Length: 167
Picture 1: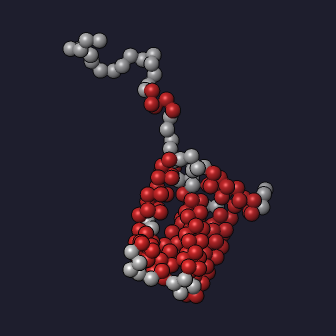
Picture 2: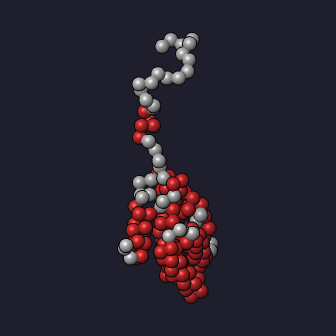
């Protein structure tokens, strides 16, 4: 039996690779997770950089809270997995990200560009964890039969009635 490290690495690899070509997965990620889920970040970003009516520190705080929420929900989702090694690994990742978030929120909340970059780094890692948590989600997979676009079996006569129509 392989070690738990190999097992967890295979688990993560499978979850990262499976959704790459799935339109439903990408659409959900871009529209729901990054677009709507990050609405507070987009608002703070526009206020600080486009309208210049808010401090850059607001962007950093919104990034910190967004990545904490996204990563936290994803890690909880992964810790509900039946596999003990996967649960333990993601509990560990959860503690690491909580520590990163704590340092960012309480020690790098000075409104500097560095604070914004640290928040973007946290969002990147949160999206990776969300990806792993949802990479095997059947609701986000495009389970399409390639024959669906051309119709059913051509050897069967169509059902219905063509009375009153010239065929």
